[in-house]
Every structure is written in structure tokens, then in C-alpha cells.
Image (cartoon, protein in one colour):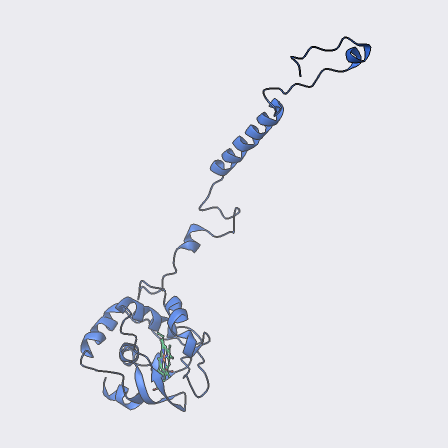
Length: 199
Ligand code: HEC
């Protein structure tokens, strides 16, 4: 429109000229403000200490994020995690089992007693009658020989120390030795008596 000649009429002279678009549509002030906020945020992120101080974030320290290590140095793995993943389905998180179907681990002499027999249960499983806390069970306990020595040591150390059980930790070396000693055992033990005789 601007290149068009304005009419020289009175009305034409009273009219305001057409608005022009500036090169920079966003005001300088706004650009500077956004820039300042961005710089302040970056500075805030990089100057905030992370790691040891717990007043920021969700209060966990670096130590909390490291996997828990079994106390007593018996095993390098977290037995409670293995228990949660492999055993709770049958023996329950409470270690109480399911009445008449899955025997309890809490207060069980098989768990708190001879550590060798306990490793044999894990390494080969049981298929037959076994008496636990005065009740007879006749189910199938799967073998866990695919777990490493560290993992078996970790999980049995855990079940020997929770739910009121207070027996000594079991080392990976013990599991390794028992794996070797019972390598001729094919299939699960036929119940509690076979377990005691086999050890
Ligand atoms: C599929 C179900 C099932 C899973 C999973 C299972 N168990 Fe068992 N467990 C049994 C049954 C059933 C028996 C009793 C066997 C019998 O009656 O012959 C048993 C017996 C036992 C016993 C000896 C009896 C007692 O109660 O003290 C121990 C110890 C044991 N299990 C530990 C474990 C551990 C540790 C895990 C995980 C690594 C595990 N079980 C996973 C079913 C299971």
C-alpha cells in the first residue's frame, strides 16, 4: 500500500498511515529476561551440590543407592532380593508359607539347623515327605542349582536371619564345597529322611 500514491482529498489526509512491521517483533526486554532466567537456572543446576547432601532431592545419599551388602561378609549379594524374586511366591514374604501347601521357613529347623543340609535343599530340591514345625508336607521344592554360590549363600544367609531366625551366615565357600560333595545326587531328595541320610 505504501508505494501507492495517497489521495489528496481531505479524508485521505486525515487517515493514519498503514502500520509497519518492525524487524525485531519480540521486545529486547523480553529476550534479555528469558536469557537471564536461563543463565540463572543453569547456574543453579551446576552450583547445587549433589551426592552427599540430603537436603536436596529425595533425601537419599549415595550410600543409600548402593546395593545392600549382607553384614558379616558372608556373601557379596543381597539375599533378601533373591528371596523376594525366587521364593516369596511359595514361602511368602513373611516366611510363614501357606498352611498345608508350602512349609514355613520362619522357625524351621531345616533353615536354622545344619547349614550343609540347607544348601542341599537349595541345590537339589525336595520331592517327598518332610516335617516342618510339627506338620508333614508332601510337595515339590524346586532345585536352585542354577543360582551361583554367592547367590545361594546370600539367600540362605538371609532366611537364617529374618522372621526371628538367628543362625550364623553361610559362606559362598560352603555352598561351593557342598555343590561338589553332592554332585552325584541326581534329582531332588525324597523327603526329610533322605536329606538327613544324604549329609
Ligand atoms: C514352587 C514353590 C516353591 C518355591 C518357589 C520355593 N520353595 Fe522351598 N519348598 C517348597 C515346598 C513345597 C517345600 C516342601 C517340600 C516337600 O514337601 O517335599 C519346600 C521346602 C523348603 C525348605 C525346607 C523346609 C522348610 O520349610 O524349612 C526350605 C529351606 C526351602 N524350601 C527354601 C526355599 C528357598 C530359599 C527358596 C527360594 C530360593 C524356595 N524355597 C523356593 C516350595 C517352594
